Image 1 (cartoon, one colour):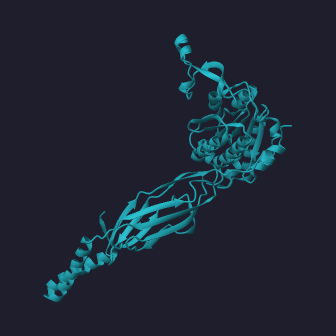
Image 2 (image 1 turned 45 degrees about the vertical axis):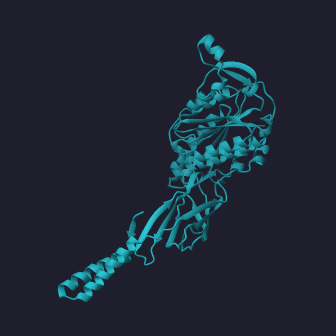
Image 3 (image 1 turned 60 degrees about the vertical axis):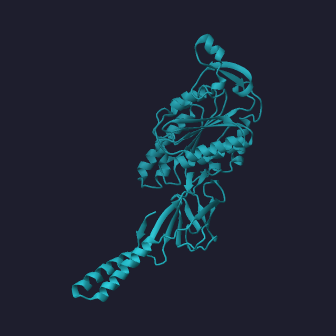
Length: 420
């Protein structure tokens, strides 16, 4: 751990050399001795280190939180050596996405043998995602504040910030959604279960344990066993994470609105003991198979916390890939701004034609763009008309379409569903 010079040490070195040179020029030994004393003091201070053995332990009030929640972080610093520390400065590295709410993440101290000190502060998590708090930067200053030694203690805490969960139960009840979904009933359709249902062609992502090796030996083609599903009708939630979903502000854009909607819809159906699948598409398609329970709930939230706006994958490519996996009659929620995708109409037509109930929840990227840039009123009206025509065309194929503007709460937007 190399020593760094402080401004005080640099001034002392400069003064010492200057005094020696001036003393030599005017033959004044007293000045030369004073200059040598300055330099000698620097040399001794640089040689004496006196670093102590520190133990740093971090505690957080939670490791999984929801967007907008606060986290209490506490650092306990203990001097394990038998001598007093030098002057210590500690700085706990906090991601810039987190905002300091109370306290401060740095502290100065001087600990005696075996002594401990605690630093506590509160941060807010305004953005979803996976973050790491740490490491801890430690700076030692010697007694005369001439040299500084810096090091890092690799103590890290991983924090996952989930999207917010909105209460949408009343909205879906008033929209007659329960009439569309049967709830927890046993269905004779393919899915996870125990009883054999049928053979089908192997698809990427299928478990090797489900491969029928006898059929492979007989036909030479990879086949998998389908089982009868012991749960309920699957609900598929498809979220658009393409690059166009970044339009708007950091806190208000189609992707942020979409993750809140997906998390809230998934939470509602999982509480009803329905089986929920999450599909995200942007640069690629990520598929989480339908399951029930708390484990699936946290899988969905963790997946939504990870998504970033990138890529330009078309919706039709997603629906084509999902077609063999979606059980007959399963409802499909599509959460997308529908911008920049010419395959939207054929994709939704294909789903509706196969008997799926399709609900399209579309955050209005035009209204979101107005939050960050000025759009002339005439241009805005033209863009809104084009968007309305697009949504009307989608509704013509039997889909339930919701035009979701940023000033409308999710529960209010869902009231637009008319399933009567």
